[in-house]
Length: 503
Image 1 (cartoon, rainbow, N blue to C red):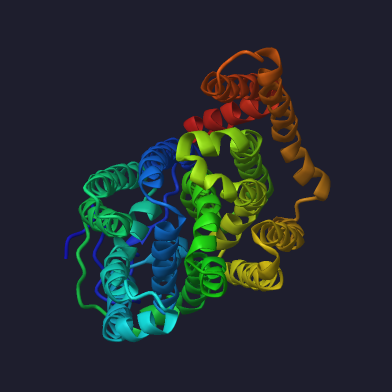
Image 2 (cartoon, rainbow, N blue to C red):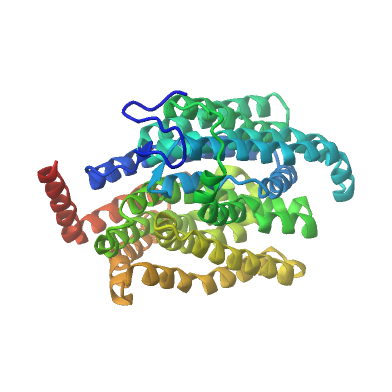
């Protein structure tokens, strides 16, 4: 079996030394570099996805998007039966060896085939039951993605565990670029919804190839029950939380009870939410999770580290989603076409939900890094149940009512995020609120600047106003944030100076 350079092979689960321990030197510096690579990773993905989405949304309407979204939601539901979250267990565990890696890989692939075959066999019956014949072909095609993503679980975990985030960035940039180019080319050639379905499958194929080469690992056959026991508890809870995230229960329920047209309008808001959320979660989640995992025995550093992560998440979240809310009324019809104007209630509501999500991410990363994936699973379960209940209660009243109820449902869960952080670190509410003060004040000033642009330039064209709102708002936010963050910048410099002395 190929090894990463510097690793020591281990013949059994109990052998020593461990094959791959966590990074212990210059973790803060590696984390900051990781944030840079992760930001490049997510930034490139978002840019490519936005360009592809703008093109395809002008060529297709809500119904095509709704059918593909429903198919993807069904595949996600099926994928929930697989143990993809065991990759998180590999990242979190202090010491791993070949048996852990081989066991996870073959369990993933075995369960993948167990769910793939029935999906292909019963796709036609499922399509007839739902009343969308095209699903008989879409479901088997998209089900291939389940197998590809499961094959990537171990390689991706190894790359993240080693804090080699440049490979994750390359995976995302190249995978999304290839998938995006194929999607746009197919859409321009008139392939319709098949262009939307092809993109995620192609992206997964390219991502697997890059991760497999980057991890420098190939599966062996050291499958051990003892290795499975080592990872079982964390892996099951992480798989459950991962399943809830991928399940898209809101889309699945809405598509079944309201139909593809309404789901398509909802999907636009959710798509923009997913794209922009990845700027936060894609940049922070892998870095902070592995950082907390590598320091899980150093409890004295957790409060300061969590506060810095919370501040970082808010610095990105507030301007991104606050800006989306502020410009949505003009930006959506201009960029995507007037046929998407009925989706504005979903877009603006998801901007609010995006702020909630960004505030909850640091506590989720902390819990995973410290081995408490059960806390994340519990919160995600409650949040999904409340979201489904909100949709079912409001579906007869229309999209606006659905989105209002979803905001209420997510707001009810938000305080639990602080309680998780307090339980794991002991952070006080005043310290928690202080970490949010600068991003909040900066965002409010930014929103004032954005709203002032149309007032200052009443004769300007709509496109000119939109570009100036985005540019002026961003400049104002950066200036205010830097002006109010002198103490935090000094703290980071001192951290790096101390690490340099220890090396």
